[in-house]
Image (cartoon, rainbow, N blue to C red; front, side, top):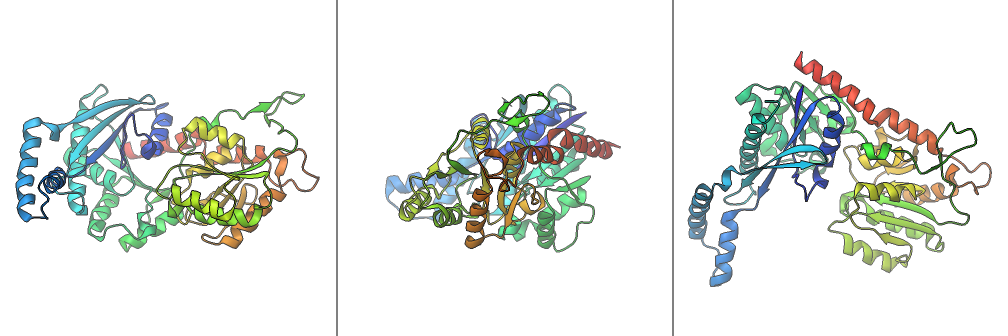
Length: 441
């Protein structure tokens, strides 16, 4: 069976992070199916770039004439150069990707116009994918973050008749930024899908609120952990050689909290830094690693300096998947203080490495964690976060053999086994084989 995945986010060899969910799923599905991915890159407005250049050269103010002139010039340029029809083919982590290129004439400010440009580019990529070995897909699987992939799948079904599955991952509904102008489009996407998947019950509730109606046929299927994180833990073999145990840490080692996320308001690192400072400013042996890039990087570094914990907080920047796994394997607790989530893939990655988690009830983690896996707190509650950090440190768990009796609370093996049973690749593949077969039948 040939499965074609549509990503709502860009994907090319130099930029794989936005579509990491789709890549992970494609690699797992390729065990059973012939899988490819469609992505779209919708570039900036040619009209706007031309107008900006002219304003810079002539020092003149905005003029409606510029828009008209450069609108015609942009269309003529795309027509003559053939750029409007560009589809690039890549192989990324073993998966074939067809990347459609879209250009705006006057910028993507209008959500309906932006959607039309995106779908047009995606249809060119689909036509290219359908001509390659293996023929056209049997099932199309669109991942909406927000909507665009679903709108493309809807157009593919309308034009070619292929059934599609729609999975929604978007935080747009929680954040209140899902455009009202696209509500009817999303309604058509879910109504025409063979299956609608939400990654959490909270997300389903938000989508239903946006549409103003229930979606009784929608199913809840959580995201899957990347297979890299299923690899064996750094281990020492016990005497009987029958089980995997974490390597013992050196005596008097540092205690490390780690956060892996983009550095932006919705991820809550500002809250984490304040709570960490209150709990551990006087204890230099406790460290906090912040792994990721984002618009708040400089502001968060300044916050650490102001609170006197710059020596205790390390900003690791963007890390590759193997680097993330290495950081997790050397840490004691993972912390995700998000103000909103649709699921929280980094949570299950940490759990797969046997690391307990502190996370907020922000839309996803509350459906992942239970007391055997970590601690749940309310979003934006600094006092609760401070208390959870202190509780995590006082119960260093079985990862620290130096911990006094009675303080151990979280067993790495229990955490890991629970995560792989619920979110591992085998469970995911089994569910998707059943789902795709039901669509075809």
